[in-house]
Length: 101
Image (cartoon, rainbow, N blue to C red):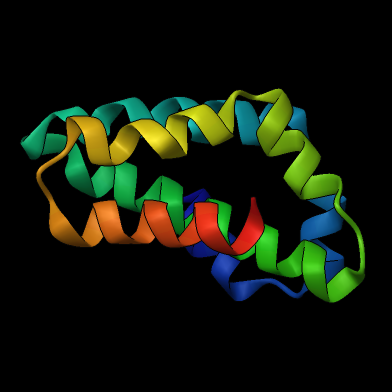
């Protein structure tokens, strides 16, 4: 739900509702990347993370990047290719790491 909602919001709108209480559970959902049957959950989490990181860039702030770091998100992004065999999921996680960290 958050992935879909975030993809429809402007950066200014995202700034109003995305906080640590939102980011932390989305990062935790990356753990599902290890299970083929739950890859879509991890994919939705990656879409959310990508959307808010891009919004932060457009707003000229690193607040979303810091939230991701505080939620152990960088480590979780690094772990996706280690635990998943879904090529798209792995490529998306790698791209986010390369672009933002």
